[in-house]
Length: 467
Image 1: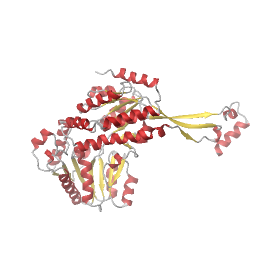
Image 2: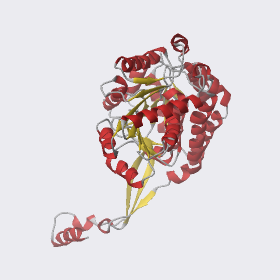
Image 3: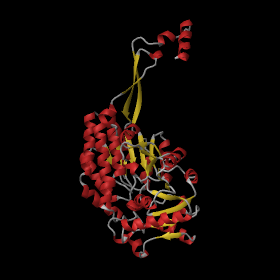
Image 4: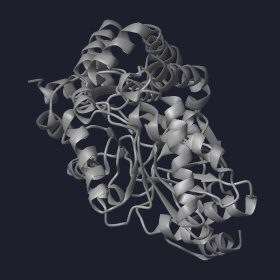
């Protein structure tokens, strides 16, 4: 087993020897990450081997290109981000100069999940390097082929005291999260996120938690069902629904019949996207047997409750063996079902009805704050009402997941869906310390207010209340 403490001390020692990497060094670090993304086929093959099957297009589009674009953007802007920010100096502190430095934190621990094993490991890594840190990555044990490739490629371009990958199961992950890092960056479930935060708290390690939750999509009563169905189907069934910002529940404003119409439209669109899903190379497999069984039990519970379930024709034994879970729409399920209480994280979509915008807002607010919220409406008043009266990590209007693709927007959760944000400048700020610096002149105002206090101190104190 890896000696985690020795590895951490090695990186911390190297950081102390070079606490502020130059602009040129940071750009060179980021360029190395960019070059790794160009070996597309190796990543595609490794991820497909781990999943069983995943579309090469999805791997290239949702993993490699996002890391490449995000890293390239950071490389181009990091010099500007590193410059000290001058801020005003109040009259009573004059003469002097005030500014904020963005200092690296030190050694960053990165715990990455299995659903996007390249993007969610290497984009945080690139952010840490842009911020001048060193990093140790603990990837999910469910993607061993991708992990081996990542370990080998990173070792070819970075020394171990700058970037390292450690592999192992839950025991290693628990020990990893208990290390006294200078920052811990975790992406995964809310349940595990609570344990990660508790472990980090023992050493007062600052954490970024990119979690999940049930991200709802509200569809206005006047919004065309076919248009909403396209985006919702894409946003639910991409990567077989194994995406933290996937549409988790669709809310149709109107009658239960409108919810049924929306569900049927989504089912039709899915059939267009993935005809013969069981043999379709564009439709991803579920990552592991236990995850497949969990999804199956959710749908079986809905059927047992008499709920309408839409699925394409399939042989249950065959798809179970291949882990190709059928794209599933569940119409108007009651709230007590597991699929309405837990994050689904698979190709199953509940569709429910609410009579109006306010009741939809009330429904969202009755649950944990989601990582993403989707609103489909042509009316600005409806959109603004939802934005003004709900909370979420991010929002896409009249689409799904597109806010995630914009490096100029922060990506992060709110409350149970996470804390902290990254992408672009937001990640740079997250993984640096804003260090306040005041540079005084040889003479400064404290000479006028030093004890023993007299009339002059009284006058200056009075001025402070007038300024």
